[in-house]
Length: 299
Image 1 (cartoon, one colour):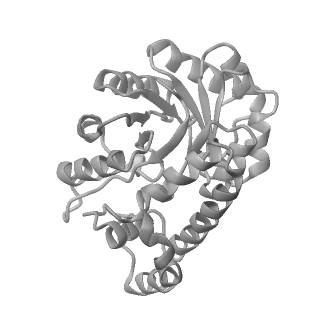
Image 2: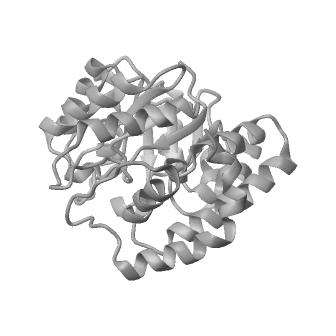
Image 3: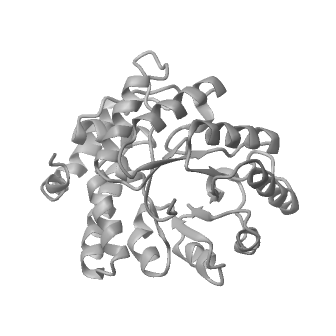
C-alpha cells in the first residue's frame, strides 16, 4: 500500500438516540471513497474515539472497511492509555482488514519516553500492517520528540507520523533528518500545501469530511508541484476552517457536512449538536464562500 496522499479523519455518526448508526456511517464512508480520497482514518479525534466502546469499535471497523470502494483504504486509530489495550486494538483492526493503524501515544498519565518507545515497538510486533505515530500534544499532554520518531522509523517500528501540533515548525522538525522510510503528514488543515511543498507525503485533513473534493484537489496539486493552484485551494480551505471554528468541535464539522453535502449525521453526548446561536454564526461565515465551494460540491 502507499502511505501518501489525502487522509480523511472520518467523523463517527450516531442515531437520534445516541447509538452507533451503521447505515449513516456506511453511507458517509462510501461518499468519501466516491470523492476519491486516498485513505479514511477511522477512530481519530474527529471520530470521537474515546466515546466508542470496544464492541462498537469492532462493528464500526467492519462497517467502514466494507463500505469504501475503489482505491480508498482504511486506517484505524488504536492509541490507548495502556500498551496492552493499544496492541489489542491494533490486532483487531488488522483482523478487520485495516490497511494501517495509527497510534496516539499513551494519554492521561504521562509515561517515560522509554516506555512510549516500547509502546510503539509492541504495536509493531503485534501487526504486519504499517504503524503510524500520532503527535497531538494539546490532547495527549506531551509531544513526541522527532528524535524518538526518527529512531522508531529507522528501525522499521513505524512507517509514518501525523503531526497535529498546530505548528508548521513542528512538522518541519519531523521532516528534518528523517529516515527516507518515514512518511510525515500534517494534521492541521492550514499547513497542508506548505507541508507537502517541504516534503510531507500528503496531509490529514478533517475539513475533507465537509468538502472532500476540495481537499482531494489541493493535495493532488501540491504533490504535483502546482504551487499556484495549491495556494489558491489552500486559501479556500483556510476560509472553510474559519467557518467551522464558529462552532464547537466536532459538531461544527458534522453540521457543515449535513448542510453542504446532505449527510445524515448524529451526535453522542457530551459532544452535542450546535446551539441555534452557533448554527447562525457558522452559516453567517459560510455565506461568503458558498459560491467558491459550489464546484467542489457538484456530483
